[in-house]
Length: 531
Image (cartoon, rainbow, N blue to C red):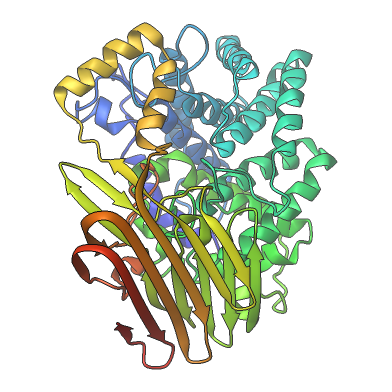
């Protein structure tokens, strides 16, 4: 089931790699650096492409023209040697800025390089020293906001341990694992900047399941079960996942963790696999919109690792395994995340209570509408919005109704400029990875409320959804219905999705202090009425 997506994606990823063995950047996977010359350093996180090559070289499946081709093996090995070439003195790597010492490129690139090393039976003490230095760095650092990255560091360290065999790696890993498992929500999700995000949860699942697959550490099996059982509610009947209602708006899915859990007998994993892959060979498959960067990053090698596991131990999918979106009647509120799921007959809706009541509704495989609340545009890049992930929202849910109350969040959009980039490079040279915390506060962790209050009440009725909105402002403002693009910076966000074309309220309300809007989305008529 994985092959079709893999085969149409491989050429895109291969084009990102410098395959000229006489080139000084041979093995570099950042095309912007080695070919286009638009970046003056290589983004190390893209070196993960080497793992995709190693898997293509080793895995025999129909249509795999790369299997056992010596060129492919040499290119994969070259990605490891180039990674060693760009390693910083403390063992870390850069992703977006020189001297960045970024956590994601360090964790993900260590994992992928170690797996290339093992799968291709490489034997190079210099590379082992490279891995050891990076593992040492990860053992001393944690990622406090994006838990998928912290889980990746655990898996990377264990993979390095299988090569190096030194106990200090396990000791550092143990501290990280104990901490991260204690932070898992009782609902099953790991936090991504203050909330549950479905695409990044698939990364968390991918990495934690890979650790389990390698180590057989039984402590993580139950957390993995809870993770899959949570994710299943946010797979839609058209096969797409997540999006507007989740903390980071992501709309892609890494499948290797699902394959691990399917082989462990998890019926939800069976249903998820069937749903996310059912359109994989068709035009318009939702993951075809993922850009070259993230295909090179972790998407392609996750598909290949899933296929590798499937071929090693094929488990047929039980057709009785159904996702919530196919069960006909669902009424589930996840209080910790603020996510509410409602389903009746062929209607399926998800509401993000802690994003101001963002709602996404499907009828069968067709998306009927998306409603993302409101914005106020103050000009010069200053925008206040209701659809901002914020644990300050007061959310209540009862029967078939959910109410959320809170304040508009003020966001200032950033546009890069030569002066800004020069300044960031100087700062990163002086303070290293401390710049990352500063940038996250500016681009991701905005927490500035306005004095405009918002209340949304959503009621699911027999023939449609009734939405009642109340906005109160101490001064007149122009209110515009928000589209479904998040103002929060998410590197792996804003991939095209068919929900971008869905019906939603586009009305603008001029110079109001208090505003009441009632909307009704009919299930049968598929019409939006506003009063």
